[in-house]
Image (cartoon, rainbow, N blue to C red; front, side, top):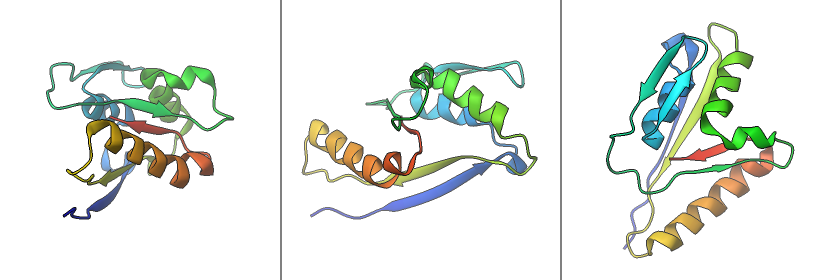
Length: 123
């Protein structure tokens, strides 16, 4: 029987968060943060089984690149208390296959976030 879990966090600059660093960690990638001139390398991180970027129709095609997207967020959100990103963590049923869980998660984020104009990155 599936257990339900949902957790939502907001990453803000006021808490010294870096959207680029958070994205690099969750995706297990190496991303350069232009604003700080730093590189965040989590390419050796294990356990990342799927990554994907889902964009609304009006988004620039360039935002399909994780580094470009998150550097654009860092550049556009200049307030010291800017909300840079949200993390939505959900549990997926162990009874489903990996492909079914990916499809389920994709449908959830499309219905709840992408259709509202948000870019969604699935690490």
